[in-house]
Amino acid sequence: MQKLKIHGGHPLKGDVRISGAKNAALPILAASLLTADPLVLTNVPQLNDIGTMLKLLAEMGVKSERTTDAASLRADNLTNLVASYDLVKTMRASILVLGPLLARFGEARVSLPGGCAIGARPVDLHIKGLEAMGATITIEAGYIQANAKKLKGARIYMETVTVTGTENLLMAACLAEGTTTLENSACEPEVVDLAECLIKMGANIRGHGTDVITVEGVASLHGASHSIMPDRIETGTFLAAVAAMGTVGGDVRITHAQPRSLDAVIEKLRASGAAIASTEHEIHISMNKRPNAISLRTAPYPAFPTDMQAQFIALDCIASGTSAVTETIFENRFMHVQELVRLGAKIDIEGNTAIVHGMNKLTGTSVMATDLRASACLVIAGLVAEGETIIDRIYHLDRGYDHIEQKLTAIGAKIERIN
Image 1 (cartoon, one colour):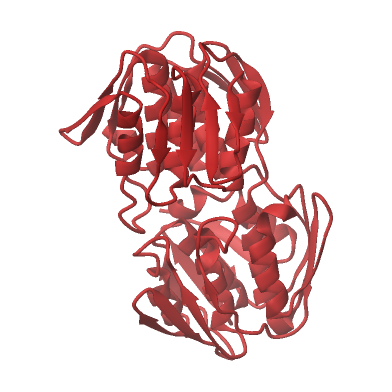
Image 2 (cartoon, one colour):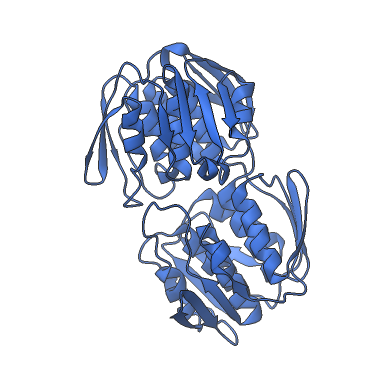
């Protein structure tokens, strides 16, 4: 099993190019099921989750061609409408094939999902929404069995904000008969990117980026070309890493980014003491002092993202002062705390809040990644810790970060992948 070895304490300086967003690419790959024509995508990140989604689609009969950062998919001759447990258990985003399969083919059989163990994240809102559109759905032997001769437009109110639920219902509504209104829908930039791709494919969508999305169903969708948006969480992770370097220093220019999708993160980083300037597609960050402790509360977009919570806890571990980090999205997303404590961090958990007492230093040791963003958190901690840090179970990291150790090495980090 591969690990990362990090020698901490080296300043970060140089340029980092951001890859395409995993959380935008996955639903857009699933959208290829909505048409028999080719869907051509660029700025596709090289991630394990992307490979898993392409393998899942291939098992259904989707033909695909992949180059370094592009993919062409064609679902003109599907032979299988089942998403098997063996693949779905490794990636929750596999549930995103449910809506497209049901809308275009009238049936789908999708295993209940797996993925990172950061909370329950039930799929009941997906099911309720599709049932409101006329689908008959049962759960049998760990699979969602869905059938519908023709989905009908409906007014769907989601009790809680769900990104994948919004995406699944949005894709299904594109081929439903009549008008579908999604209320209390997710406003995340990745949802907007999916909607923009669907519009290029011929969908009639309004209101994406707000909490009410309206879809006028069409008879069919056609092929299109689309460039995946930059990954705002990868961007935020590199920004947090530079800010955490404190007195060691950092001066990094992040390119091919989307600064407007990171307002809440950038605001907190400025409060930590980082100097940040941005243009339309670039962010320049510099840091030459110990960061200030930053308290935050996660919430749906445009508030502070849950996917950046762990990285900011790493920053707070070596900050000046005490911070309170409250997690409101997932009930089990503090598993990285026990690993940070191994590095010398002082953190108390009170319900859904982590009280982080900033320390003068962290000390390298062996730690274990428990989920995707926890992996990034431990990388940041390893970069600032004295001595050597070994991070085990980095397959989590490879699910969501495109060649992170190569990008960090290019800006001065001492980090390598070992067996």
